[in-house]
Image 1 (cartoon, rainbow, N blue to C red):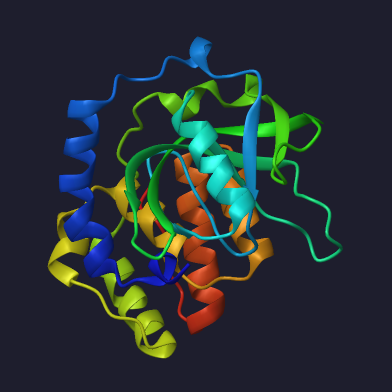
Image 2: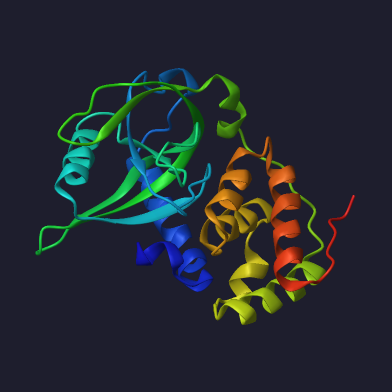
Length: 232
């Protein structure tokens, strides 16, 4: 999972090329075409959001089987976090495999593109050791619609973000940060910043991107001790 914690430079500089390649090769998924059954990949501290990109290094046999099965069908895998007691959170996000590479040592490297959040309606019997669910998509149709500008105060936001990155020992391309749209910036940051699993789950479950941005900035404020507000 090292790719999940890569610098923002990697996130932004590679994202455009990957996404354009994906759009050229894959048809869009309509909401009504989302599947009634789906494999899930429980990983603590790993967040996928709609329109975000998540690299994964898959090596366990059960998850290699899961990826193979997904590639033969709808290419969707549900990312979801386990709780400390071993139970699953009820809300996750489905990602579609748009980059796939088999390595010489038997691993599979994939990149998921976030499609739509879901709730777990029922859990099915396992297949080849991996878990499967009946997802409930009903509350998240807007995940598949374009989002408007969040109207971030970029100067104030960048100042606090730099402080946070210095505290965490993270690096990024600040030019790439400035060039990214507000939604793409918040999505990428929410996914890669090393927040606690419960905080990442809260970011996932916010009703809209504007509320997610507010929560993200609150988390930065708590981490850095700086005050930051969004334009209204």
